[in-house]
Amino acid sequence: MRTTKSYTKQFILLIIALLGIAFLNINFGSVSIPSKDILSILSGGPPVKDSWEIIILNFRVPKAITAILVGSGLSISGLLMQTLFRNPLAGPFVLGISSGASLGVAILILGAGFFGGVFGGLAMSNWSLAIAAIAGSGLVLLAVMLAANKVRNTMSILIIGLMFGSLSAAFISVLSYFSEASKIQQYIFWGFGSLGNLSWEEIGVFACIFSVGIVGILFVIKPLNSLLLGENYAKSLGINIKKSRNIILIVTSLLTGVITAFAGPIAFIGLAVPHMTKLVFKSSNHKILIPAVAIVGAIILLICDMIAQLPTSEFTLPINAITSLFGAPIVIWLLIRKKKIFV
Amino acid sequence: MTVKKTHIVLATKDLSIGYRQRKKQQIIASDINLHIEAGKFVALLGKNGIGKSTLLRTISGVQEALGGSTSLKAKEISKFSNVELAKALSVVLTERLPESQLTVYQLITLGRQPYTNWIDTLSGTDIEKIDWAIEMTEIAHLKNRPFYELSDGQLQRVLIARALAQDTDLIILDEPTAHLDIHHTIKIFTLLQKLVETTDKTIIISTHEVNLAMQFANNFILLDEEKCHHGTLDELISENSFDTLFRSNLIKFNRSLKQFVIQKDN
Image: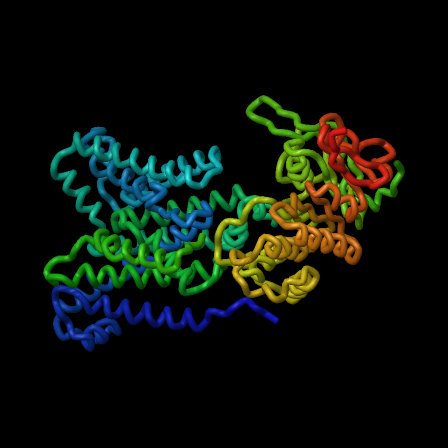
């Protein structure tokens, strides 16, 4: 008798929900466009107004795609961190990886004035922003891992992650102090997080790096499952711990880095979505969890984006504020109700 | 001692164990020469801190030896690939499992990882081995329970089932009866004895249940400050090896009872 549950039904429901919410998301915005016309524009039909076509195809659809990439990428990163560190509190934000990415971007934006012409020449191309963020997140992750090898206690690892986060923040403050107001403003706006304003070309760059990360994940599904028993058991099952750990770290910093580069530091998603997903999919098998977490993450971020649009319709609230405002209470509620969280 | 080489599952030659910190070596025990035959239930005994866990970790390849060598079925352990070793030797450790939602069945399934493909798909053989492991350990009723709900005794049986599913000739268990009451301790010992008798697997355990171990195990490894003794109960008694196992004025080895007894004040 097989007791490995099949989750086909849940996955079909989730994918339908994702498509529905993505469509709903495209309906939201400061200019109201009837759903009927949106459908016809999306299917390539002749638009009622040319401006509508531009709004849908060059603004709303790219934004929805960004939300899906960001939501799923952060959620997967969070899941990988939680399993790797065997700690339900781990996530790109808690471990200082997002701060590392911020530091990379800060050095690029603010450092131009600080370090003189070295960075000035690099300009603010899509690639340089992405590379700076990935380098920053990778650097912090590497430092956390080196420290993690010295201390076995996972609590200490989390504290070390927080410390690296503070260090990055402090370094950013120093940079800001010596920077021009306009540069600081540019950095602060980046820090609010934003899913919009990405051109198709930028989304192409984003999706490219994102895919590399996703391919990497395929190699660690098996190690991730045995890591649920702890490193020593995983090793006794023939897993090459060092190699698997490196892949997981590279994938996480790639995903977190590229996301932070294009959408700013977005809190909460990476920590909370894996927990929400595990409550629905009562499974610890990463073959199921990784796609599930990706879809749930995408849905959640699309919803957050719609909430950010809602209040005045004229303005868009910073997405980072929404994810925390609505996310943190949900996590607290889940924990109080369930009294148990899992790696 | 002349034993046919084919029957030796695990052998160590002048093995020294301990920890290496930077350039300093801290040797815990050395000159360990073991020849463990197939189909034996072997108990590793010794007082707290003498290096039982270190010895088990070293022979199972988790920790590097400071000197000498260990071989499994006449092949040196360092020459095994990770997966080869996982197919030859399985372990049950003392460490607590990290919290997760794994069910008992999923946990046992992980024992098949050395055999599954890159995405962990179970074949017919895998499922057969898993079901067999569940049957041997009599845990069918727990199959769909999350492991964190289990009592220590139940969890230990599940971990043994996981090791069985790994289908190795040698299973090493580090203190499988720690935290268990006398009933569950005996249940585990009985299970291990049954496994050795019915499957020809070799099982090595470390334990502090010295008196119980003497009634269940076939062979013993005694680790004391000076030396590592290895043999059957009678061989070791005739060598007086038990007398130096615990240098204590509280307990004493009684040869006629073949048990340690509390030493009362005269």
